[in-house]
Length: 201
Image (tube, rainbow, N blue to C red):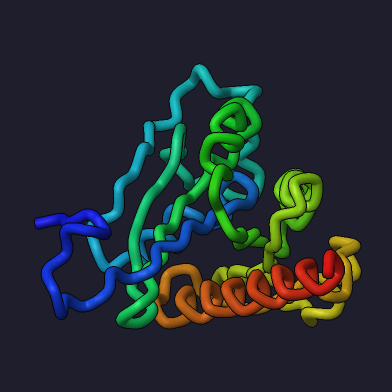
């Protein structure tokens, strides 16, 4: 049973703080996989089967085996501590579904931009979007099997990132690895918020 702030029983434990974050990146980079891996509840998915209609529109280079695509969002939830819950929204990766991004981004404190080093240029639209909105973000290099390994400083340079933007390695299939990425984002978002507060003061 849910209680409003003035209706909670005396002595009841405080409600945890809910924080919204986004998982973004190019088509087929692993956003749906990460949301599913990290969520402690059954994730909500809005995937549709790729059809011949998308031929010439959907670029399957490097992900030829992919048979579905997210058309609205993925959603999951993870409890970080007794007083902190993350609501995780995976964005659609294809340009034709980007009209939902502004709605998904409302109220988000930060974002994870997933990167595939085989198709690193696919990160740029997401990076440009979050930089334009002033949204704190981290870049998480999804270590696909067989993908060429690059040093994190090489990825940072290739994406022309601000030196303060964290770049980390992850395996989007693994819960603990994905959770570490989210924690890195939380820490970065808090540091960014504090730095902006000091700049105003």
